[in-house]
Image (cartoon, rainbow, N blue to C red; front, side, top):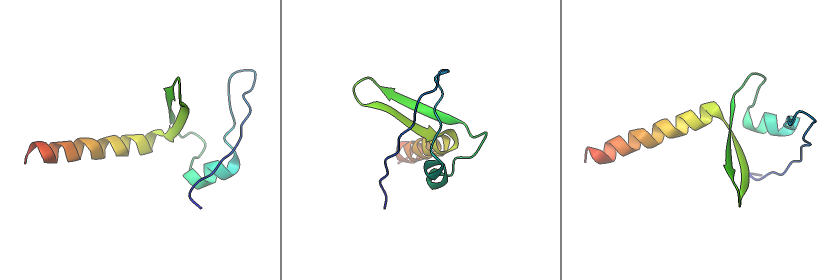
Length: 69
């Protein structure tokens, strides 16, 4: 199973609670930083900040490799 769907409610302060199963699946722990990507038409995507940094580093490394060819 690679696709999931969960619901969350927004509290009075605009906070959401990420469901426990979602936190377990994606390894999100207390104190982790998350990054939110927004698109007016498509909505919001959430990623662990560390995963995003690793992804960006890989993009830059591969870009450097192609620049050197």
